[in-house]
Image (tube, rainbow, N blue to C red):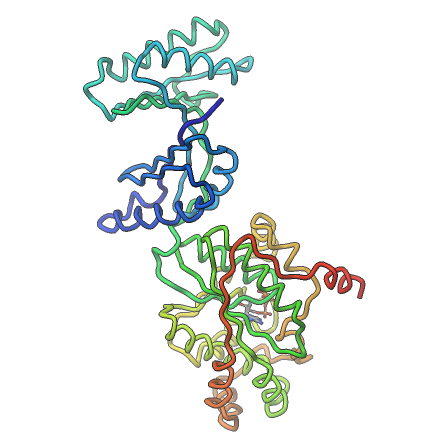
Length: 405
Ligand SMILES: Nc1ncnc2c1ncn2[C@@H]1O[C@H](COP(=O)(O)OP(=O)(O)OP(=O)(O)O)[C@@H](O)[C@H]1O
């Protein structure tokens, strides 16, 4: 079946009251960005639906990209027919010839946006139902949960038929919740936290701390590749790499081992706060999950949060590891996350980190460090790149070498 158009239904947008128009405009822009490679498409985001005219573009390829745009509840590929009921009947029969299976039930569901059309919705339902029953004597009409619902939409420019509804990505259009920073390590959890934040409409920029020579170029590339995996949900993502070596060396030298993790994290958060204020981000997201490792207790979170009044949001905080892994597999970050490249936190991880660090102790240890100098030097070394889904950074030769180690 040669589809001519995709009809897109919005998800939660319909509940957004006065903001609805700006949400729809944003969804229109995000959809245009996601489908930018298909120059022949015409995309119109109306109040209650979006229509994408294919103009010959490959439906499957368009659908694959469209399925990653947040804010879409579902979409239906449709066939445009002239406003002539004989043509509609012919197309309806052709559709059922393609999809008919023994035992199938169906119903016809007609809507009219053109109320001057010569037949009303009940008449159209009856006529089309009749022609299907004539051509497929075994098929049965069923109003509740039929196998197939043939949707017919009468518009001014034609009549549109569709029978499939593809689930969309759900959530809210990226950008409608404002900008945030994601602390992205090379692990399993932070890319999943990023995906969940994007899904709630947050426009994310990635912040990655790296510590050469203790961490390799490949570890940095792994974080960039993880960013590329999240890019299809937004188009392009800014990747902010922050040199962390001097801070880690200083903390390792001057702070008791049991507080190393806490103090390192406090530095990370201070840096994020400064970056956020420069880049107009409203919150910091990370991949912490309660109780998963020593540093992820409530006491530890409190000791880390102590350095900022900015919201620190943890989308996976109450999720079980298996559920996080399930999402990581769905968004195709899992295989990359388990590749054996070192993270700056693990390189400098103490053998026995404090599970219940005290805020007063953390403050006291830091009072002996040149916190402002360390922060400003790290900020000076920041490099920002823009990453899209087609980018690849991990060098495959070195990669196979690392796997042999
Ligand atoms: N090098 C880094 N750069 C940026 N953020 C980091 C880095 N290392 C850790 N983080 C942040 O701190 C969180 C907790 O890190 P930790 O290593 O304790 O946890 P984890 O369970 O291994 O998480 P992940 O799987 O995301 O690495 C991470 O989810 C991430 O948000």
